[in-house]
Image (cartoon, rainbow, N blue to C red; front, top):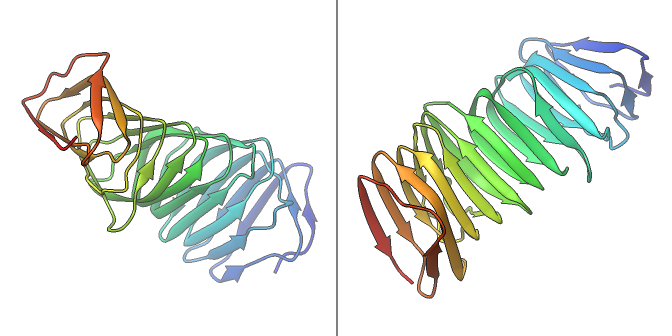
Length: 239
């Protein structure tokens, strides 16, 4: 276990075992290494500016106002919480079996990331995930949700995405047809889309697909548009 750990510079840890904490850590740069290591560093007093990692699994809290991810690789789960007001960006690539992104005002993770499954609850989320096949669990943003992929993104059963504005980009394919989904606006420039929205009203901006576009707005939804809809085919259901 870690007690109180404070460095005025970098803090680098490496383990093939498990490290937890009983008090907060403070550093400028945090690096977590070790084959198969398991880090549970979820103390709400933790504070650091940058994160790099190459290890097994990470469960991490950072109370600092801003976090920059460098290269972060986990063979297992990656869980990150940035408190109520943090903002997260990246300079490297995030590779993980799963990523759980919690807290903060924004996550801007637009490198060529590779993540097996994503869950999130935050302000805004802009995420590029180029794994060939990936899934979304429960994803909630109080603002915009922007996804980009060159692969295929689907949803886990009994989960939903909630956002004010949904944008789907990249050359990939989206199958987001869970009936709990809720968003107000849709924009897209991608391969194909199969999408369900339970919100009462949806406004399409510019929605472009090189393949099929399928949209279902449930029993009572109303759909309007402010942009154009170029698609190889369009299947419009519900409403």
